[in-house]
Length: 240
Length: 240
View: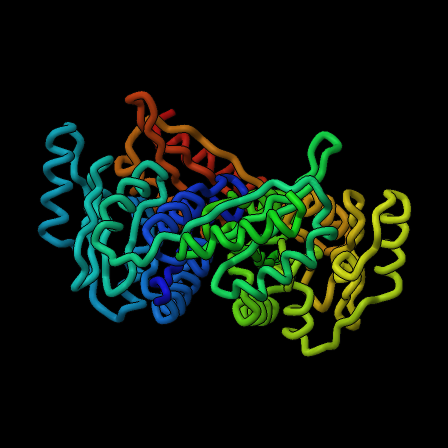
């Protein structure tokens, strides 16, 4: 049976301008793979309402689950929650349970829960909250979309909150072999293997370092015995 | 005048499985910003024909320029060139000038230009070649789409070949200020600035490290005097 499919939407001008190097995509990709959910597509868009709404709609319709990162803080450029509400055509307002979480946090830290911070309690109608053990301001899930913070420590904590609630499939297993030959010399063999093991994904990633070149061959699949068999055929084909 | 807009398409199972952390997006984002081209969107898709063709069509129609990375090597999973030809509805075959580049390279290195390697000379009809000073196998440009390798050293060299051929706008200038206050305390001020300087992008990126917290405020725009003025107003608003 095919694993559930997922997409990710990274939101933020700072990624597209090159100011910040995103790390959430790589983290989420690894976690989903372990959980047996296939990340099929990632999109990165700016802090732009039309772009966010269009991407959320497209990804939500095309995949079993969508994960967003970024744009849920207290400042004017944090427009993700409103865009999600627009994409789902529901209302959005400050919600009592989210406000209570923020109130308790700011009471404890001696900071004021002002109008800007209260924006972080704006939750689309019908959403459920995602726990944020790091900085309290919650994320939320609506439909199949999980809306999370962009700050990596918070994003990672929210992923840890959400993943156990999702049904995964078989984790994607992988084995790899480092081959000291040019990709072009092993391409035929890999093509034959890919045809024979159509249920597996067989990838070839060249490297060149300090005058030594070769390729890492990676075999991925849900069935460990098939992965083993393909690796054995690979080794035989290479006369190893 | 608005700068030209660009999109990027990253192609490869290895990114989506979490095996490899992409670095080409961050590199391209920085280069485009310096060149005065606005990177508006990035998509990452698997080595899947339908997904690649659909993404190329959508991005090519929606932006002035598209940059792709990945999938142009000699192995069975390198399907980008064929997908680009399909997206543009043109034929694809081994081309003499591309073959000559490869032949000279393999003659010099003593390796055989076999059928697998010859796949790297398959160029869609009407494309122009992109020079690859690192490992010779060329990229190509067709319409507004620039097709480049995924290996970072090669990708970077190809970007260096392509960028001077593109008309850029005004480089995006940016200044930033590190503020040791909570985002929620400066959100009102930033909202006012964003409204007053609608031609600029004003971003706020919180940090928290070793018990110290605050935010980096980044002001970006094409007009240096406007960026200066906004930074001065920001400092005044913060009583600095």
